Image 1 (tube, rainbow, N blue to C red):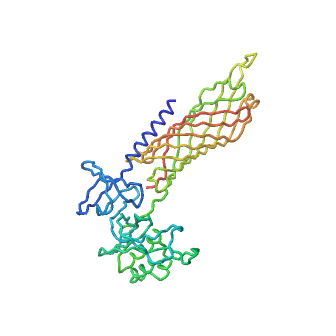
Image 2: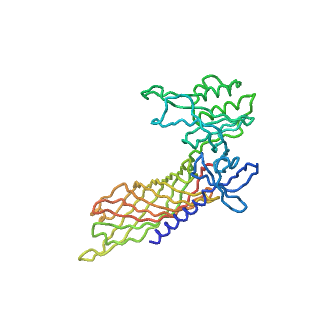
Image 3: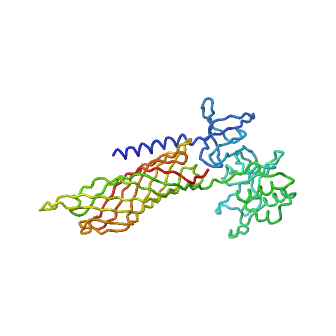
Length: 408
């Protein structure tokens, strides 16, 4: 009960810290050109926010801003800074849903205001945004002089039966004109360009390598990628054994405390602020438990014992919350044990069937600092015996881990 209460309190603590951690360091630039530093809550946690909340460093007052109310803002993330600028212009708002596609190839525009995310900054700037009308993704170019131009792309039906879809790919002609004086481009570069972030960035990267233009991009948005860490694990395990289904259930075993060691792998998923990850571990461990109790009628001492050496493969999903240099976490998953050796007293073989495999489920809490990690784990296993209800193992582990290979 105490362990369950501790786990619930730890989860509540993480929830509270999560609420606080949704604020990212950053700054806003007002329409007067003033730069104010503080923390920004990207409301909705999206790359294309409709509004933001800003809490300045001076009085901690929270204000919400919509496009047009500030000039720009920047959010600092662990991966890279994200830059946004406020625009008000005509945007192509033809429906993308097949049920509402029109049979007109000409763009349908509507004046709207929005925050656009900077994708690339060189001689010109490339932005991406979603319009507030239908939420369609767009790309626009901001030229060195300050003028802007949306790159037009639209799908439409080319027949009255609405069975064939055409594409207005005016953006290719626009890019052809923009990149015409760059000798590094050929016709296929433009004609094969996809109306995607990857496609637009590829062209911007190549354009800014033109000798007559610049030496490269000053800024390029890069998608967050998965990170993988590898390390060593050592620890102690306190195991309790209960035999079920036969009169051997009268046997009372003293908990066995053993050392274990192994290797681990930690994979953090992208686009989740480093909070969701997959954890795997391979441990070498063993337990040796022996006891005796009085048999029926004669009350003659009956020896009962099991000695198992095995490899344990653990897989888990982890939720972690990076806070400064510390990262508290909770995780849950399953383990699969494979016996390397199994010996037992004759009484065990009389009532149970030894098996080379066991499975368990577990939950744990822990704290990571730099390359080091400390974890407390509770585990419930079906043991290495079957028949008559089998056996049940309960274990608590304290594990220390050191990551030999860790991403920067």
